[in-house]
Length: 414
Image 1: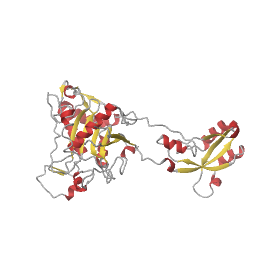
Image 2: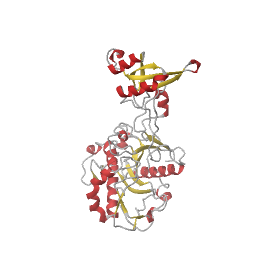
Image 3: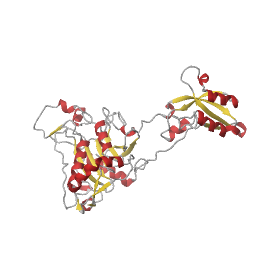
Image 4: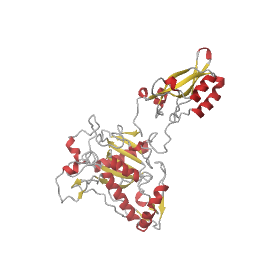
């Protein structure tokens, strides 16, 4: 049924064809292997490769007869004038002392992000390659069980995205992956009569299982999996004017109608879901609200900058709170309704976000602030996408939190 579904990791930086990587000129020279250690130590002192730490200083090559030939990078070449005439004095003295004959060589400007890039780089000059070390499930692949879980939650999000006025909207589902349970869900509320069922309920009965809440009746009310060449589902383009992240100014083009209960230009699905998650926390932990507000600034500084850090929780006096999120809730393990919570989550730390459409910059940044761990989306946003189509917010190293991003390629079964 889901054989054609795929999960694709969206890297922090756009991939560069291995044979088209940017290069810079460097001045190198053949050296006697006996002097290699002395020369490298001295060059690291007088001409360090500060911005090229991935480039190895020495190039080792075997020539005819099994002999070893060593070349060393003396310094970077000047971009103006005669490059060999611009060598700094300290390097020039070293060259004279060891009777070195300089030549110009090209080295790759940036560190390799894949093994294929690294192999291509080494054809010019040896570089170091360090595979990603993220401690986040999915970066290096998903197990079959985890894949099925991702597909199920994405189906649920796609089901929510069908509005009552036959316009597609974006849908957001926040999931706690540790128990495979929906924390909050929402649809766009920028300018629509559609009233999403994102209220928080606390009940004692268990929620409906996955089979009844998702796997039945989806095909009649979900986005088509067939796509145009630009990645859109194969439908008339005007149907997507209700997707806030695709058409951020679409609300202004709608006729003013005071009867619309949910109408605000900033109420994108992600924002509403975050609000719903916060409301859930306030209901579950009423006695910790003031403490949470007072310590929010302190907690911000305590949070790890890594998206892989486990959820940090604040201790409260609430005990044995039985939680159920209503009959629309997804509980893949059937355990969520009996789960006992004694600590309030800090924002959305450790949670996953499922979106039908790739978020815009505003929504993507809001998810950074919420400490979301992973983001899954089904369809790209070629106009304002923040996670791969136009921008790559997940690759901004200056941010104090980073999440992993994945696209779910929807199969033919929906």
